[in-house]
Image 1 (cartoon, rainbow, N blue to C red):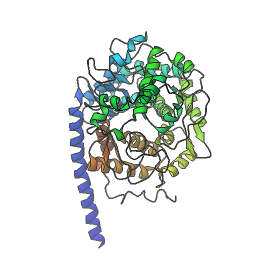
Image 2 (spheres, rainbow, N blue to C red):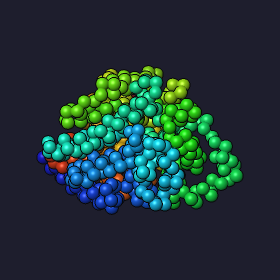
Image 3 (cartoon, rainbow, N blue to C red):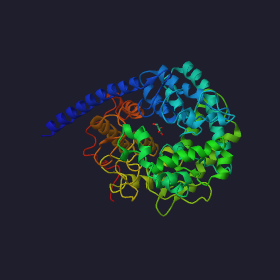
Image 4 (tube, helix red, strand yellow):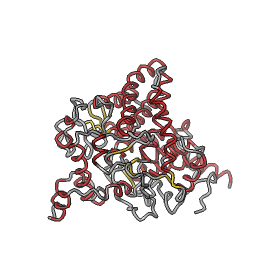
Length: 480
Ligand code: DGY
């Protein structure tokens, strides 16, 4: 009997490996189809420009089989960098008919904008991490050449984040639009924008123009409307972008005149990790991080603690202006694990939340909003579905604190999702159905990365059969 079990286990492993090898080929085909000039678009239909954190995740996948393209993916982001150091969330493809085009953004209203048209906002700062990970695939001399190319831009970017977005020197960088955190319509940003209701948006809706707008929304032509932003959210987001545009994307004006800035827990967690990686890059190329900037990095590590809510045992984003926490249990609350700078004690509390089947560990974790939270919606964008980039961040977050088996379980979840439902933008956390656009670049790229990076990397990165029925092993006890 035991012998049979052994053979079945080997067979299951082999079948898992074969499935995942095919998955890698299919993922590479997605990245090939989405390649444009020197970079890769997230999705030709829905996102036809170059996005900042998308390209970082894409390069992290590409590095396993095409280092030249991975380097180029990151270097091409620098063509959009502003003179003040900001790296914009979108570097636009001129003349594209996408709604978020040069006319919409009018980046030239800022004296710092480059000639290349871009958006006027930024996105999560994964770039230093992506540069370091790509560089690890290069030999010594080539690694240093590439990192030397990236370093000045990275230094300028991180300095800008602190000078422009942390005027009070709290250590927490403030965001001025939900697009900057990347979790767009996550419920806590909805709370932050509660009082932002421009008259024209209200009038539009009262006059029943909502339906009319939907005819022009390209996203809802490509994806069912209930999986995207609501009309109100879409109008508010556009109105807020116009408002920032009016201020020439000047952060001090925006922070002074608008009451909607957020000290975002996901963003600052990613920043803390990226600061560390920038330090590692500096060591490799023997360049210093200026002392005042290194000091600011330390303040972020400590400041994450300001977002801790001891009643709920979770981290929450908070308002930049009144420092009130925005209390909703979202995946962002768990991302301090990824920062690697919180204490083991805090990490253990977060992991207890993560493995709770009633909230963050349904059949296909990790939902973007806890399934038992009143804001949870199974199929709407960042209001419930599972996203592969969040699982990638949490995979590394779990590794940071020694939760290797749980990390492996999350990695296997990614393979189950993409093997069953292809490279969708996001997935049902309850039954794994694919939502949003298909053939989405970062889903493909991060699946490739997890395939090569995982625990059993020598046998193709799979350890099928280690977990049955998606249960975390006895490394953790799910008692809730
Ligand atoms: C967005 O829309 O925020 C994305 O980064 C594009 O994938």
